[in-house]
Image 1 (tube, rainbow, N blue to C red):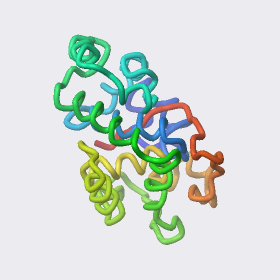
Image 2: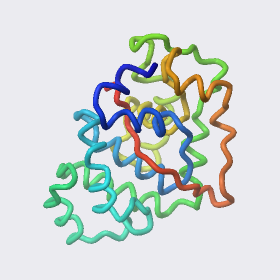
Image 3: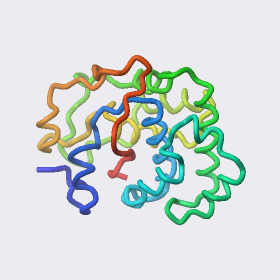
Image 4: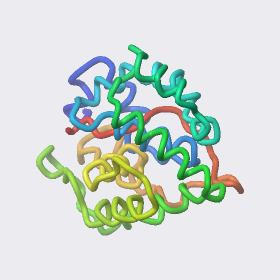
Length: 209
């Protein structure tokens, strides 16, 4: 048994089984997921998932230090890149977010995002798709803090999709095989490196939307 969306397209199967809802740590990895969430806004997640490698190639693997020094020529290159979503506002937001994050201490983004992970024991297990929220108090608070610190395209719904994709919450349905495998695990206890930069494969965004 899988969540219904996990079988709705072939591309979703591996993503559902191996990535979505699994803890993600590391500033660069989380920057990638924030960025892809922004590009997904207004689109289906499958559109982003099928362009994941194109995005990574275009944005230097989403290494914050590299994207932060992209030039006007890089911006024009991105606007002409058919391997990504060529949305000017979203490209500008991604470049701007990288510049903001480059001024933070190593591990600060990881620490901030994970500080908003709710206690898993206090969350009801969703049994049907309608039980899965689009926004929560925690995602509203996370969105507000990210915006306060200068990040863009991080609204409450996008912030909650980020929380779902990066394992801050587990929204696999009650009878889903992935939830059965991860039952009892507290994602907040995931081990981090000393610099908070554990890399993780995969990507983000909520396929519920």
